[in-house]
Length: 186
Length: 186
DNA sequence: TATCAGGTTGACTATTTAGTCATTCTAAAT
DNA sequence: ATTTAGAATGACTAAATAGTCAACCTGATA
Image (cartoon, rainbow over all chains, first blue to last red; front, side):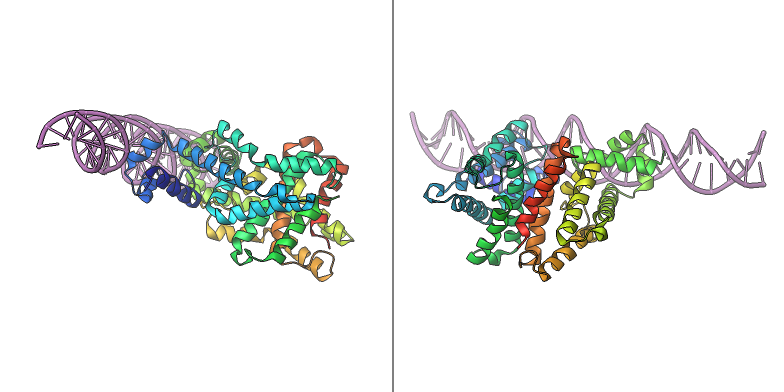
């Protein structure tokens, strides 16, 4: 019944489906079941709305990413934990994942907002650095490794989203993680 | 001096920078140095314009992708050839590459156009199939391998675009290809 | 019951923009 | 020099849309 939440949820769905510019605020209000003016009581502008959405998504993912990380003993299992956390979050919050993919580089997301969002992968960056120092993974430019790693992470996620039947398949999980692991391990 | 070409070029630049909906046709015309009406002499609508752009890009990339492929002897070198072709094309036609990335899933690209575009990676698909049969690369679902492979290809390309100084660095090229190769090889 | 604060409403406005079309230009042919 | 076909022009229109605001609820308090 929280109107603010309803507006955010409606906007997420509609921005994903039609894009930012092709989603009139009137349509968001309608989908949320509120008047057109109500949207502007909660958000000063359409841009503020999408920026709030962006930060919400980022927070949700960041919180999840390092779940249970300190219970893992080996380096490989730590990385796998992050891989799984990323996948699970994306399958649980698919709309949020797709939103992130579509808008992480969009111009309607302000520079300030985006900079906050960059901290998203801090836990990943730390782990890569550790892996290079311990000579577990390839001794290559940190930027390049993280770029490729996130690339694999995202493409794998897209595949999981397109094939929901794989959700509980432990064998496929291990196999798919090996694509990532073999790519970066020494 | 070909006005049609000038319009296409201006549209490519502006769509990349501001997005489809945030680029008025008047602005495209101005950038191209023609009157607003002229654009509609060559294209029936703004949508037709972006669809033509999309197919042009696709053709340009497809033609390049299998260049010199039959001169390569080993399976690995064939794959590397495609990797290099993809990279070189993207560095030579960076605007086109970025355009493709931004609009390959956009709703303003019609279904018909997109289906034509899917044939883009035919040569890659064939090569993967061959690799699985010959037990050179992992025996996994063709779709998954190509998804991950394109993911690595694209993320690597982004890195090269962000670091133009790497353009002629043979060592880095070999190293970066290993990320792809190690990921999928048996 | 009367008052009041603050959330909610939706008709309205000012602006933007895709696409039109009557007119003007251009250059080749007669 | 005149005609003419088709390309090019840009002022204009009809539609869409972000954001406003005066009026209207609602429910708590006196």
